[in-house]
Length: 452
Image 1 (cartoon, helix red, strand yellow):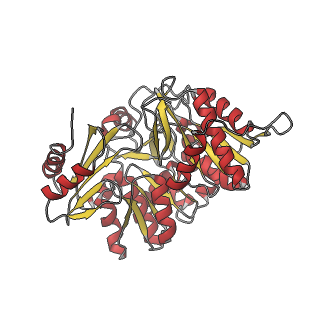
Image 2 (cartoon, helix red, strand yellow):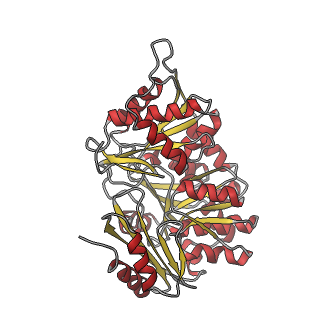
Image 3 (cartoon, rainbow, N blue to C red):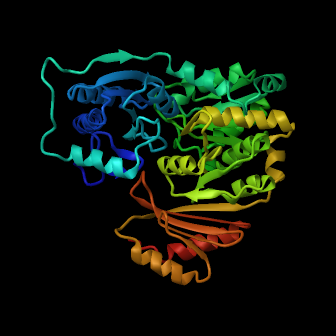
């Protein structure tokens, strides 16, 4: 196994041909199949995104699952949230999605889904890794090789369910006839986002809708990567710009002038739309902007924070009986449909809010307090315990949260330092009322975090 393979709550990630090989994919897929069979359900959903290595790894995963006696329900190329829903729809024992999400084009990964449609928790993930690390796996003979069925309807079921959500007024959205500029970065988004938006009465002006996985820009939908989308918004006079990450679980927005407003606003808008209908608990991760707290405050709701990672947020939402939540990277989670980040849900709910309020994206942003978020990276050079201690001492008087790395918070600002679960780096994120203050917090943290 390559030393740089990343094994975390987010799955198994590596560089294609270096860290991640068909042999390794087959072994981890077999381990997932063994785990599902031990739990009494040897049916596993298999899906992939649009990356060029996807078909190769899907073949390896399919063989690995069948070699331990699992029946494979192959959904082909679909969004990650669609795969989560497919696990629930089929009553499967789990699922595997072959996707590296927002990572650069040379990466790919395996994400593992439990029978409840939620990504595996840390304990179950460790069990899977233990099985994979064993000297030999219990393969079946010729008479027990697992079967194979195909599911070509997963995306259709997913979009039908989105349009049926109680918080989505389809007719009101259609009456507004929004023009949406759409950037799918040549990922799986092109397979479902145009169809969803058109079914909601939107005129779609698209770019990078091809599903060939050959990204022409860094694929993460952060503001610096959405220059082309901003230009498209201005050129076609769109009401809103929407950008989807490569596996279709995150949505970022621009306003009608093409300005990228930051991924946290996607979740803040969703929280506002949902709570306006039915106030209830909200759960987000520790790196999510205070604009979500501001969106919930008029409804008397205090936001609960969980460790970063969709599985962590999902389980916290379940324990709190939350009605909406997610992550500040554009990942909206609506339990009415399922406990997973979902760009289709996010798009529909944002359009609902625009239709309901009559406000533009810019007006929705201007109506709330303004903050600046600064995100930085540093090399990960080993254990961070001493770093956390030094940072806590440096920022004496801050509220301290050690659920996930170290989060130091004040009334109107916070600093979060944590090891990434998807890259070999340390993330440093700060938010404050001014960019200068946020940069100062990150700068102070960077001075303490070990560097080369």
